[in-house]
Length: 305
Image 1: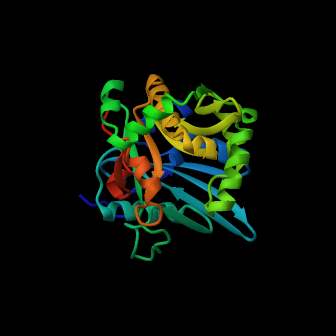
Image 2: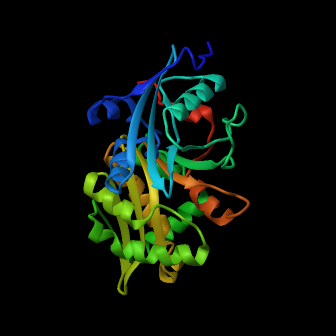
């Protein structure tokens, strides 16, 4: 049954990290709703509030990050609430309205495609993300690679690259951050700032995986994954011209998949796929066997355990 705002209880979640993780640490649970994401944001001066929602049905959980921007409090609810089961659109809307009532200033909710109407303004267009299921064994995962992607992986493996992985501190990330910053300027895209990654490595030092490729000239490509529960999110990537010629990113992503699977990670989110604006990158992501998943209400719930 649909829960109205009046019948819904929304309260501060007085949970420990272990309790929060127990509720949200499942395959596919979004990075932005993880405890470590909130801790990193708090280390940068944000106010982080966690809520538990009783909708007389599935329980919901929401992490709201608030920053002071000039005279306003600007709050963000990214990829939440996360629900313990299926809820209908009206219940989800009521939950967001209730959270907005408990939040000073402006509350931005993403994805927002199912929050239009009822005084809720849609700010972000619907997105599609590529998600790899790591639960099959490595032989099955390799067999699931698309032909061209697998052929490029074979060429990368024969190119004489040295692939290394580590659990990085911030100093380990500096070369990748510097190269990727230049790439951002050239390609005109955004992302989390280096300060966030510094905070992440301080509050969650064991929740990152850096994969690097080198040849006789030095570093030619690198990828960073952030882990949260049994899920991982691709965060940064860069390759040089030498790396592109050697198809280093294929080798890095395959190595990353294997290492994450060894850590008991069961899914990897490769981020947004846009077959119109960036078809080459979309083909690369989907060539891994990833599923293109459109963000909608049903994606914002945790799997039954």
